[in-house]
Image (cartoon, rainbow, N blue to C red; front, side, top):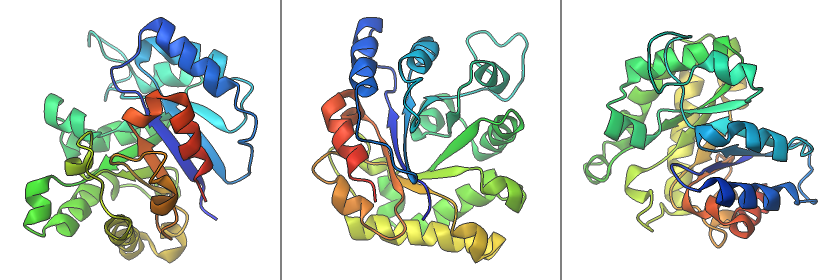
Length: 253
């Protein structure tokens, strides 16, 4: 079975005290220890080392950064490099979240560079893709998402693409309370896997974890995750409530 992943994206939330409290609660989880399930916690950059320390004893919980830059080092004030992440023992990094695309004008060409540098430093990218409401209403979502994958990922070899996690996030369902139906999620995840299969073959496509990100909550996670091509979720607001996120973790296949 593909690795099933509950990924938390805290975004720009939590004071230091709130972050410590949330991490303490996750650190206390005792029943999340199966071979095919992991949790990945993407915290704001100031809390990366704190999260590493708090979760160090949790074999199935990993820390992620929410972004990295396309350069190793230099005069790029405020940025964080993949080399820095590697030096801190950070295992994962979010690449191409819709908010980064919208607010910081990140395009697929830049994201391809970020993917490359993350892999160079052995930090696993969680690559985000997904369509807006206008694209969905025009019924162009399949072509749009396939193009995102081709532009940002398909320069990779088969040996490298299997090291990438893909997160499908319908932009119209992020923070809106709207959620793609489980059938809609499965349809797109199946399309993503088929797009991978056309490029790399079924053996590769079958091992890449594809997560759903769009208003995943404790009360809908089981249904969404039960779909055959959905391998977990990228969770925003619900990940800021420890009990809710633990429910989502336990909903993984």
